[in-house]
Length: 180
Ligand SMILES: Cc1cc2nc3c(=O)[nH]c(=O)nc-3n(C[C@H](O)[C@H](O)[C@H](O)COP(=O)(O)O)c2cc1C
Image 1 (tube, rainbow, N blue to C red):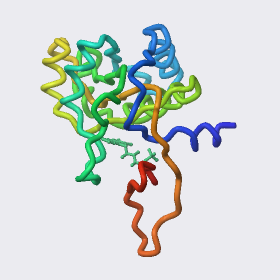
Image 2: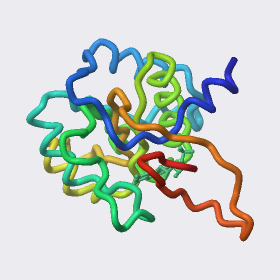
Image 3: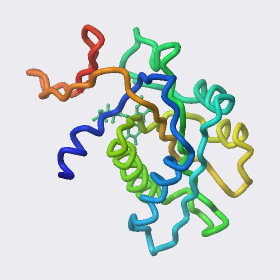
């Protein structure tokens, strides 16, 4: 059931680093995005897999996690993502490809659901400096990172909860469990 998959597809920020994700599987998740709708069918997005230990280690410091949780380091040391998919806009397809943020979101959620269905989990990362990531990955001038998807085998519990009595929907952690 799609709703069950959506409920299971939470944002995870701690992973078992001993479980790697083969490139073929990451490519298959990207393949799901080929079936997504695209503005004017321009198909202006490109996807860059990051999966070597060296590249993953270099990309991690460029990503910012759970900004609301000031007193906890996420991902914890030794529990980093083992792969990333960087969704990029390709301005050689259309000038101004950077503006198609809705297309980015549609593809991001589709890929996250594909990962969840395959028994993995991850987190959409919007908080990063695009120019830094572009340089790090030696992307062509016309290709700009728009969203980072981080993946691994989650080794933490995330539980869905109702909004607080005061109406707050801010996520929080208690006894190692992430409530959202
Ligand atoms: C567009 C977008 C950008 C996000 N950027 C970040 C981010 O930079 N860092 C992070 O830790 N989580 C990020 N998240 C994850 C959200 O914090 C998360 O979806 C939210 O807390 C709800 O939790 P849930 O996904 O488990 O429902 C992002 C989510 C979206 C949709």
